[in-house]
Image (cartoon, rainbow, N blue to C red; front, side, top):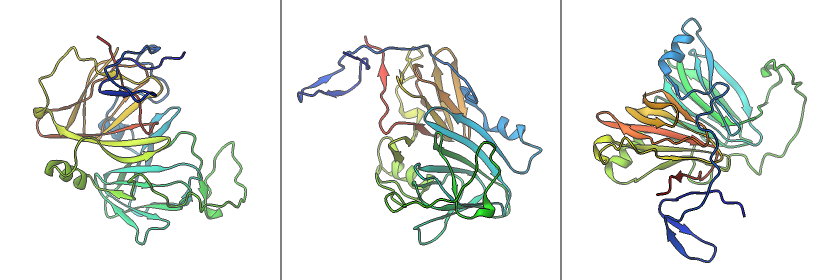
Length: 305
């Protein structure tokens, strides 16, 4: 028998319909904090921008694992990514600076997104991106790992070593423009934050849900949490990494074999599988993190006592 979980918190529903509290299982825990490729425990936005200070437009890869790929993208006003789509994958963005116009197939009007806005496009749906306004735009772009881009117009095809672009036809009606699961083209930071502050929304708010990737809006106050327990290791994930874009304030992360990370707005924190971590709102005032991973419902494993 293959046991995968350990010391779950809350109710466990069994095949026989019996609910048990804090049932203990046995999980294979690999080596923690194994970082490779572009991944780092803490990517500071200030350092990313400094590294590209001499470039007007640039991309900076932050996450590229077996589940998701995320990068910072800066563009100058007037720059446009042409009509394109991903045949089998959902894409989402968080605007950090400037203004971006997303023209999305099936939407009656283009989406004008500003700081804190979250935009997404389902599979097989044509979109274009244009930086507008008077200032450069900066966005955090996330797609499913290994996603491929199909271009609508031949002149827009970029040079991609190792690939030949060939003309194709396909039936897009089965996936085009389908959002499902309360996904929507535009979610603003303020509407979610205001909903939580007013009590209309509670807990973790899912803003992106896909079978191969999710993004959860987690907003609150350190002052409303129990006193900090420095011995709390938190939890770990057996089959995938988790990472966070800090949307507001600061978040404190004790990370196994790394230490304590204090991340600020715009920073990204990445934790590989089999690595204990315990995110906590930090500092004065409201804090918010956008948590991302490659599963619709990722398992949280806690130490059994």
